[in-house]
Amino acid sequence: MSTSNDHNDITTLKRDEKKATDEDDSAEPYSIYSPREKWLIVALIAFGGLFSPLSSNIYFPVIPALALVFNRSIELINLTVTMYIVFQGVAPMFWATLADSWGRRPMFICCLLLLSISCVGLALVPTNDYWLLLFLRCFQAAGSASTIALGAGVIGDISEPAERGGFFGLYNIGPMVGPAIGPVLGGVLADRLGWRSIFWFLCIASAACALVLILLLPETLRAMVGNGSIAPGPPAAALSRPVLRLIGRTKVTSQSAPRPRKPFQNPLRLLLNPDILILLGFNGLVCAVFYGVNASISTIFHETYPMLNQTQLGLCFLAIGGGMLIGSATSGKLLNWDYQRVKASILAARPPGDTAVEGDSFPIEKARMRLMPILVAFYVAVCAGYGWCIERKVNIAGPLMLLIGVGFFSMTIMNATQTLILDLVPGQGSSVTACNNLVRCALSATMVAVIQLILSALGPGWTYVLLAGMCVVSSPLMYVVMHIGPACRARRRRRTGSRF
Image (cartoon, rainbow, N blue to C red; front, side):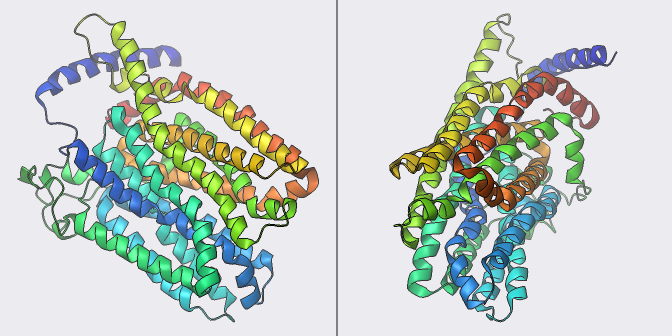
């Protein structure tokens, strides 16, 4: 009975979608911004998104120094990393929900200013107050971690599904620069200027980014500005308009009256959608495996290649970070290309003139996920190969090359799933990305907590075979999403009236 109802819902929605598409021929575009302006907006939020992973990774090289100056064990200093990850998962639930109601721009700026202020405290923290270091690291995570979720919401505001993958590819370059350069930058600053200098650097850089966004970033929340053509009226105008209106300045056609605030929506309710929950779990597991590799690089390489000094250990992170950068830069184009292939195949099977292929009638799950089995297979292979290269203590070039593969395939997989997650609920882009961040951080924090125990018990070879096996076991979830996704989207549209 349920299957029959779902089928009827989808059939009705297909007919409604075609009608809506015919009526939209003369309607306003999805976004008023030109392609160049969209890329500029994405570049601005990618700059902001850089600070979440940078604040985390720049800290790693100074952990031994902090243990010495604070007279605490490595385990207690590592607790500041664990708490950072915990707040990295929790904080976006607050900021992203506010962003879906009050606007992307003010929340973005507030997060960066909070990060800058917390870094002042960290740079000045007395070395006999370990508790203050722990507290301020939580404060730092609360500011920096939310920028990624807010940026995802902006992309959902300004882009249609056909171009969304490409924008995510560029956007992820910002957050992925952090893991690539963070450890190296932290090591250099600590060696030359002392450990406090890393926090002064983050303070100045995040404040400069906040200033750039204050000057240039327009408000994009569709509930406030529509497709960008509506200028918010008071009291939102002062916070929602950039000081220098260089983006879309000639295309604002009307000014809105003050609107009632969008009611608070608990982002955790999104987890009640089975397709979204499955995607978040799969994406979180891939991320946890990635952290299982990344968090243990310095320890494993120090034990396997004892001739490496601290700076050289930091440089080893460039391999996995470089792979992530390449994956970010190329996966967006791959996603857009495959999306167009699926769309073309559907159009080829339709009668001439029938172009209504998007909306609930479009198999967005297939368009985003059909390359996933190949990507996961390569990810599994490079993870297992990396573990055995370390186990056999081969030339250092071997594991470094495989680390590039780990970074590349993990980023390509996560980019595809994150794009699909945003496709499913574009009206709550920041909230669903916050849920994604919560699940990822929970699983990743668990992995970081146990990875050293697993390495000690099994050795590197079998440890990373085990982690790769987790990805293999979870792979059928991709097909589950492709199977149940259309019916889940139909029910969501029936409840909320959203297009996807």
